[in-house]
Figure 1 (cartoon, rainbow, N blue to C red):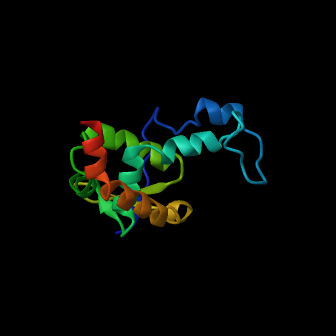
Figure 2: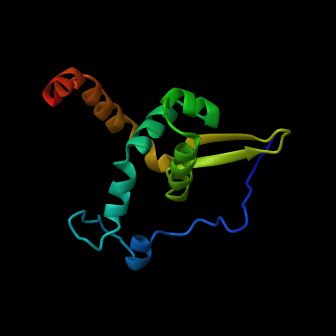
Amino acid sequence: MQPTRTVRPGRAAQPSKAVQQSSQVFDDRGDAFDPNCPTRVVLDRIGDKWTVLVVSALAPGTMRFTELRSRIGAVAPKVLTQTLRALERDGILTRRIFAEVPPRVVYSLTDLVRSLAAPFDVIQDWAEEPVGAVVRARS
């Protein structure tokens, strides 16, 4: 079946206030140290722990909501839904709805973010390896 795209009334993706205020055209590389550069919005999005986990979970391929939630573990459905909506709005993932009964919805990474999968894997490995030392340091 062909995927369909539904738009709920009143839920059109709106750019954030920071992006609206800095709606300049950026032909060159951004500057994360410039407080008016939208790079900070991007860093905020990719620095979120749920974003890192969602991108890492979707790196191998497409998943449904319940598969994602199960893979990530201990994430409230509301939080995962908010994260997925924000990632879709920012062009990091796509959401496809299939016209079936019941409707089937799948999520996958866009080409824009595929290049982040490898650095996220490195960050995840780094976080998992010294976790014992971090826990001991906290106590």
